[in-house]
Length: 525
Image (cartoon, rainbow, N blue to C red):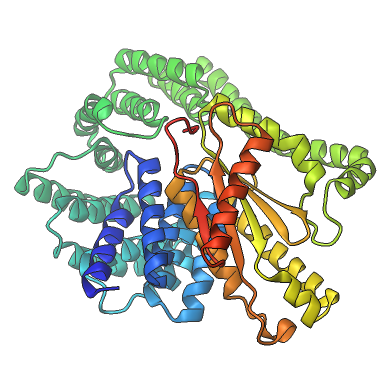
């Protein structure tokens, strides 16, 4: 590996870590390609960085289980190997993940760990997201005084950036933190700085920035200014890539500004538009706040009877939303309990019949029942599907020179490593099975050629690098892998036969390697 190659990979990974926008599949695919190149070059740090980028994409796509597993795997590797940057970055992503699960305490814990593990060699701009996330976490846990110091540090870092969005982001987040903490005057000072920076650098504030400005203006009683600000946000809204509920939120804010100025007729019209959007798109929580605002409008018109009645409807609706959430959770728990209770015994026997008794992996019977359907589903959905046959190299030597009991222990451990790989990838996209003897199968769904090859190469290296000495002494434990993609007209038999061809090629080439069929034009994509 030349120094130039290493520097190029590092620069590409820097770019991919910052690329979080409009093409998540492309970002994940490119990260998989970099992971494979890094693995081939023996660049373990770059390999792990690329893997963490793929976990980031998965989490942003809603796949919390497999993404969190991958994040922890990278975190553990980084700790074992003293890779401070990857310790920091994995904690940064874990903090966001747990925050999205509603665990604010975990957000703060991971944000602190992320900042603590950044060393001075990390450039200022790349340190910025870590410090801002730490400040945001402090705000969410009620420590605004400590958050202010971190926002100040973030502002210093942002001044080293040539991208005006970095400075705007820091000022916006800090202003909103002060607003949430009941300090609108402090928030407004930051808004003035934000506007000055944007004007001086020719930057147009996006709708979310404008929403922050309007919220602070309302808190300060500047209702006419807030109305114009939120109108600007609504005008700019189609150009941005906002959350699905952004527009009704903006409309509700607009209705509030108009009511506070005494323009109740205009406020009613705006509120009606907001209500219509909420009802059409199922924004139940915003709809509850619409009822509260409607009550405020009646009171502003002096119609206290109707205001009282609307407040009663608001409280009923609020309680209903909370009750529905609790009931949905309870129904889910109860349904799971009943299903598990009713099927527990039958499922136990069914599972036993479809699992290999030694390793606990799926067996041939399970594959016969499910693999044809998976191939058909991949064909119908246009989603790639790969079958990889894995065979332990020189396994007879282990049985002959050690014992069959030791051989069984090796098979069990290889199966455990396979199962862990499936857990990291997500059970919806991977299946591991024992075909018989020392032969296993891994089915991968939803990954292209580069991503599949990266997964298999990673698994091969993991098995070869496992500490086997206690079990087999100086005998090596390695695995050869052959993989093939499903194509138009593939059946279970033809797909496994093609994978076998690649396995034999790996064996002939010297074993302990991966061979894949080139993805042909007819492959399912």
